Length: 377
Image (cartoon, rainbow, N blue to C red; front, side, top):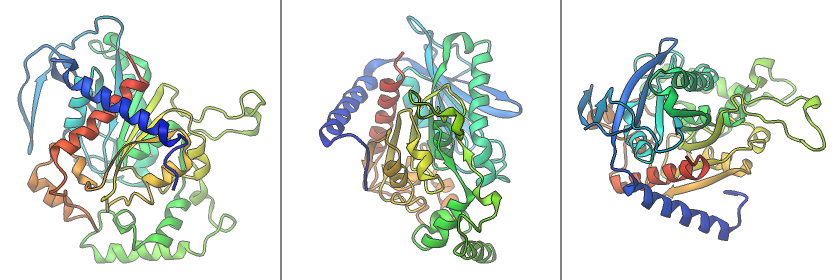
């Protein structure tokens, strides 16, 4: 299965460049990490950024962080800081992604983390397809909130923004890159690959026998659906823009599919991918980098990450991790919370003991290096 359109030699050179950048950014800044809270239309947003103020211990529920709360941001020597928006996974928050956010802040970025409406740790009543439709707008609203913030707005460049998405956050990232998904693709995928990709198809239904049976019956019915017989709501495209015939010309054969043209680069980590149409993935025009966890049983790579890489010509692998699973990328990730979340998963819920914090950080460093390459100051 194709990983990218680049030759093996170019891929090795790129990996070498990213590794070199990662080594540089680990020592490039001695700044501490500041943190401010803001909101957009009632949606909480956590922003971390470089500061000279001393970090202190901050406890948020079971999470223990080292940040300088409400500290003044450190201005760039010249110009403005780039912004990265982190889109969390199902029922998530800013805290389990704090290690990555801190890595990006140390690399010089301002990092904004929205709590997605209807799909966060306090309220996941719209988790799944309903939230997937609104997540891209949440990201756009977050960019607007930072741009208009009296403290951060003057210091942050929101004209070219990066988006990082983990798990369900991958839907945010791919949709904002221009890809489109359909319920028909989801149902047909699960009708064909239920047992192999049960962690996705029955996500969050462990111990709920009745709900599992109902979901399986729905997917079984999808086996009989075709493009011609499926109802319109299953074939509705969500995400990127759909180009009409009038938008094609000889000099510009492909209209820009991004719903928000400020998004200039996207990083994906164990993303939801099987729901996206191959045609729309092929239309992506901005750089997209993937971190692949080969031991992921929640979103099996060959159905999700590899589906994206097979069809997206502008997508490339940032790093492969043979021993990493889905939840190995959350840090900090308290042991009790990890066990509670794992109990809701059909398969692959617990972190892998053999995957080390050093390996995780190396993946985070390469994500930061990717954004440094694609969104230089």
